[in-house]
Image 1 (cartoon, protein in one colour):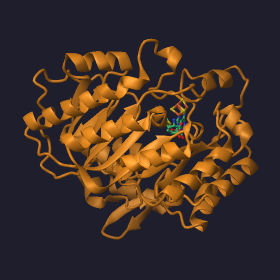
Image 2 (cartoon, rainbow, N blue to C red):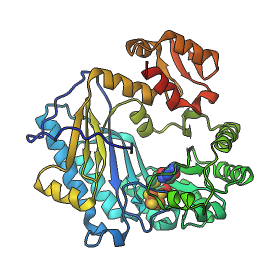
Image 3 (cartoon, rainbow, N blue to C red):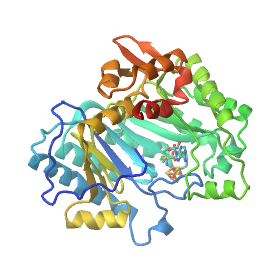
Image 4 (cartoon, helix red, strand yellow):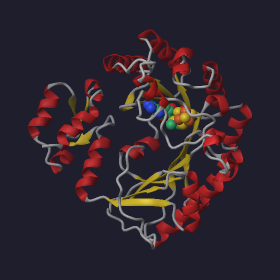
Length: 400
Ligand SMILES: C[S@@+](CC[C@H](N)C(=O)[O-])C[C@H]1O[C@@H](n2cnc3c(N)ncnc32)[C@H](O)[C@@H]1O
Ligand code: SF4
């Protein structure tokens, strides 16, 4: 969801959205909690430590989020967009597990009151292992969170130290077990390609990760984001550059190890029991992103909030937290659909490629080279080899 945002047009003064599509769509909520104890050297997410936010109180920030939930309900009502209960909720960050159970509960109550939450909806919270306790997890579960996504990143202490992660890998093992005992569905996040990470280290991380028997694993190649401490360390020669060839091997190794334990891929970076929430993004469903910097996609309208927590809270008090919006035309909607849907296992219908006037020659060449495969129902999807170059394929299809 992150990435450079277009400048867009101003949020409408009357806060009325004009639906751009008649297609029915499920509805999902992302809630951004922009706080961390410390900033990891590689991370450029919209998150702040206490020293970066003097005066802003984490303890009362849920009140701003609840105000936005009330605002969202008014916007949909006055835009004549039918009310739908949420099919999934996702508390992301930052470090959502720094919020007290009462804060998470108050947000859930507001989401239920203003929009409704489907029975059995997937409710995920991202957690940093060093913030957890059994009591806290039990409290979250009792409040209605039913899926825990833990940031493990690696099980090698040297790699964790390079990434400036503060947790002991043993805590991940401990709290995955506790979470499962309580009844949570569990997932862990891994990062591969940290400077100095050997194939042996990654193989061991995969071994430990799969031994935890979570139902889901997300696995991302380390991105060296401009302006981060990691980028500076690499440019000063203090840390090695990311080795893309080695990373391709690490990705292939992950796929093999995961499939050996029954965790099949369903999206380029995700394996196991598919997350309803993740799939909603890739299938261009409707979602409202609550919180600083969060963006939303409602019936062909995309809008995003002010990034800084104080600016967000102030704008909300004055009416709307939105900083800008974009109304997607038909071509842009189709292009986005290709970009996102190509990443999932079911691929895209050939009719979408035809609508986008993708040259049949380019499609045949990618099938011939083994990057794409034909799937049932006249669909085209990524092969294992193709998953390493997914964005390149889409870019090629969308340029003359
Ligand atoms: C932004 S964090 C939020 C959750 C939690 N604070 C954590 O660190 O696990 C969500 C995930 O984004 C991924 N991530 C953040 N920065 C990244 C980067 N530069 N490259 C690759 N993955 C990154 C990490 O795997 C992390 O688990
Ligand atoms: S804990 Fe997560 S969100 Fe916070 S700085 Fe580290 S990677 Fe980023």
